[in-house]
Amino acid sequence: LRKLQDRVDLHKIPVASAHDALDEVSAARHWVNVAVASDEYGPEDIVAIANLFASYLTTSFDLDEDPGTRWASDCGCVCVCCRHVEQLPHLRPKKLGPADKARAHRMMLGVLRARSLESGHELSDDEAEAFAADAELAESIALVAYCEQLLRRLEGERGEPAVLALWRKFAWTKTGAPKSGFRLDVAGVLEAERRVVARIASRG
Image (cartoon, rainbow, N blue to C red; front, side, top):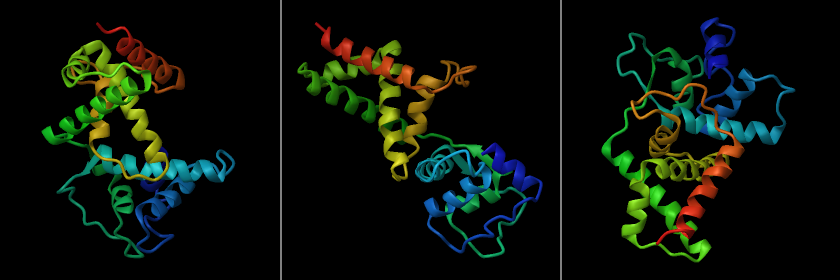
């Protein structure tokens, strides 16, 4: 996103100049190809990154309703992806509502129920709610739920603001700020999965 913003700001690329009213993922693929080096990723990687990029723009940001400029493009493309790229300086972190947070909570409960069934230690609704309310374990549950959604988004699902609510449960501090130096990696995800499964197995 930063690479793309730099190039747009420097007028090295015109916004929406390469296509006309494409779907969001196709438009995102164009912008990913613009922003990254051609030899940096393979074709399958570009598709996955484009899927995620399109989802990232719409699940994590809102467009400023009054940015002081009128959106326009040479080709007339008005897809959501191009509108977000055009207004990069005016993107604001998405404001999450109660419905988004409730949806994220249900995703976490879904993870608990699925893992409990897989392990043969089925949880009651009350037990699942208690696990999700445990501040330390909740971070691990949210991380696992987020990564399940991440895999779907890489395959082309659009995603929803609830995934941002999940992200903020483990990548942000309790005071509401991003954790310094936090990076999502495979080792951290596997450890979160291990904690969740171990806690389910040891209950009682």
